[in-house]
Image (cartoon, rainbow, N blue to C red; front, top):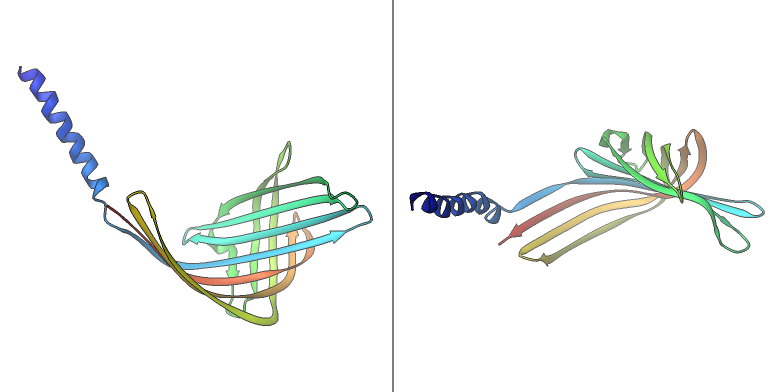
Length: 190
């Protein structure tokens, strides 16, 4: 009887001890700054047009996501000819956004995958403000996911920029936007 009682009492007690901290986890809170750059370039010839864009944004103090999209399509029928898309993360030090909204992205490797193959491309950018208006934006919201409530808010500014983006050393004239946002994020679960 003792052998049967031990597992039936101790095992459930151990499970409760392990599960209780997760179920009663304290609220998660995070706040910080998010910088971002978006720039695109488009060139057209007699039969095709090519569009290239890069996007870089800080996720947290240790992560910068850098994305590249390349697409070439037929001008006559609009059909896709070639291209690919991909994102990779790197250190936030690769992106510099200054108070005058000039920005630079240091050479960064991005794995880009097309229809059948993937290749590593090196992207970089140097952008300056066009002198246009600075846009302010703020938002906040709350939503529930199961037993958890998520609250978020952000406020920031952005402006239009122009300059160059480089793909594997080939420079392209580009136009886009640069911005900086302060954010707050919290999750509370019951």
